[in-house]
Image 1 (cartoon, rainbow over the protein chains, first blue to last red):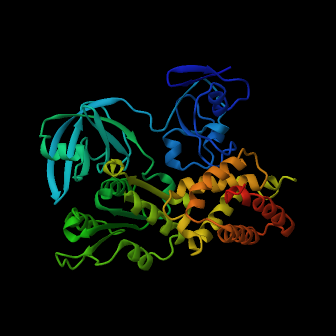
Image 2 (image 1 turned 120 degrees about the vertical axis):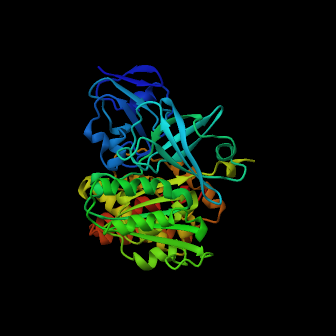
Image 3 (image 1 turned 180 degrees about the vertical axis):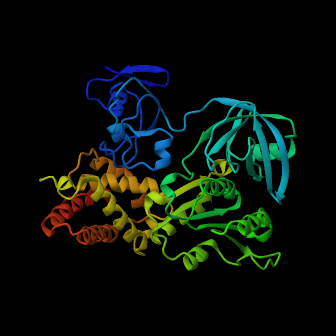
Length: 326
Length: 122
């Protein structure tokens, strides 16, 4: 018989019992619904142990790579360790290397971890300052640099972002943990056109993913739409045009609702309309969407209605903590 | 009830059905406002669980889940008209997937039985 370890306690799995059944039998509260490996309510992570292939049926490639399982159809083959997908990872120190204001309210921060730190471009990490932590996506690529690049929007009343903006200095040490997240490029996407859609600092993970498509020598088309309210908020405009000039299959589409700089190459339109007009049929596309939560939700539905397959829609929504404050 | 789930191709059928079904719902002006402000992937997970139950697959979806899961929508005005629209989309989805008429009737019968729970009736 095998053991199932969860939150530092080992439980004995009965014969032919799923991980979910073992946990429920021991009065552990985990979410679940269909109990047939379909609804994905009971997604957990198997950090140790051999993952039975049927327990990953229907999961995206990136979920599989992150060792997630459907607990209801996962019958352990050996002793396993199970955790929530959001369970905290090891905390390590990183040194601040670079800090610069990229737009009115956006800081680009580069930090260097003091020990080996593995991640996929597009994943996110926790920044930790004493008693609070916030998530930020990685714009860097581990093959090209040992520094982590983060794009930080200075939120009004944002504890972390204002601390970074006002107090954090070059050579300071900051604590980080991670990585987390499933929004990244994988070999599964190799034969499809790629559409990257970001608003605001949602550009950070997509910049990481863009680098990864180049690193993987992606042959099909790659398009990046970056939207902001004002042209001045398109904070990597020149850099992305330069990258686009160097890569034949990459096209950059900047969009601003208010083209305040009258930039000739910026489209004066909403992203919604732009996608509708320029990408009417997304049935053979892989789409990555990052930005604030409502934008991500709406755009996911839009690309789904324009034909994108559910398994080919990757997204990461940035949640604004302040909106939950009473 | 005979096992429709196995007959129409198990998970693959549920995946195909939910994609068509959900696109129809999101395009329907009568009901789409109930769906536009929620997380699409979580919602699709629930739809899959529900369809699996309708198709007679292994499932624990209960009337209580349906009742508590829709209570906030009933407060927002969810009524028979909306319920009928969803059933209509389910029916055309299954027709498009060439599910035999006899089986569609059976599935729609099971779905219709959920009306009271979904609309929070006593």
